[in-house]
Image 1: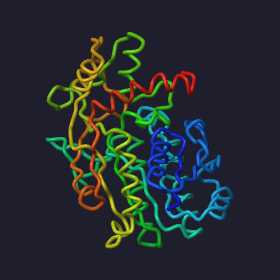
Image 2: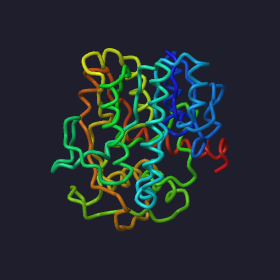
Image 3: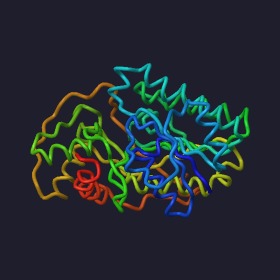
Length: 329
C-alpha cells in the first residue's frame, strides 16, 4: 500500500510513517514545516507545501498512485486555540475541506483522520466509548468535532470511505529513535515534566479542583508507537472495517486513566529523583479529561496497546540526547 501522510514530518506523522514502512508499506510525505522537521523525512518522497494547495495536491496524486491518506496535519495547542480560534478553524477545518475535494477529484478512496478524545463529554467515571456523548470544550476540540461531522456527511455523498481515530494522549517516542517530540518547548504534560526535571525547575500541575480522585486532570496516556501501530492496523484493515458503513470511529487509548499527579509520581519513581511540584490554575480550554475502552479497535482492527506508561516515559527521556544531537536543542 502507498500512503500519503499529511503532517508527516511532525511528531505523530513521522512515527506513523516509520511504522508503515516497518510493515512494508510505501510512504509519501506532505508537510509545510510549520512545526515538522526535515530530519524526520529521511529518504521518503517529500512534497513541501499546504494541504489546501490544489495544484500541489493534484501533482502529488498524479505522480503517485496513493491508496490511502493519513491526515495528521493540524494545529493542536489547546490554549493557543482559545487565543487565535480563527486560525484553528481555517487550518483544521477549511483546509481539510480543500484536501477532501482533492481526494474526490483524484479518486482516492481511503481517508484516515487524526481525531481527538477532547471531543468527548466527561461522565462521572471519566470512561468513554465511541458511543459516549460529545461535548468539545475548546476551539481546538471543536475543529476536530466539526471535521468528523463533515467527514460523515462526505462519505454519504462520495466514494471516499473514512476511519476517524480518536487519539487520547500520546507520549514517548519511536523506540528506534528515528523521530520524536520535535518542539523545543511543547505544552503537553510529559514535556513539562521533562523540562522541569532537566532544568531543575518546578513542575506545575495546572488545575487541582477537577472532580477526579485527586483533583488533577485525568488522561489516557498512550505510547506514540502503539498509536502508530493503530494506524497501520487501520490501514491494513480499512476495507473490512468500512465494509458495512463508510464512516467508522475508533478510540485509540490504553483503557487506563492516570491523573497528572499520578504521572508526576510515576516520573519521580522512574528517574529516581524528586520533583519540585506546585499547583496552579487550569490553562484556557483545559478539561477534566477522560480515558477510553478500546474494545472496538481490538475487535475490528485487531489492535490493542502493548507498551506501558513507564516505557513511554523512559523512551521520552532517552530521546532527549538524541534530539539534542539531531535537532540542536
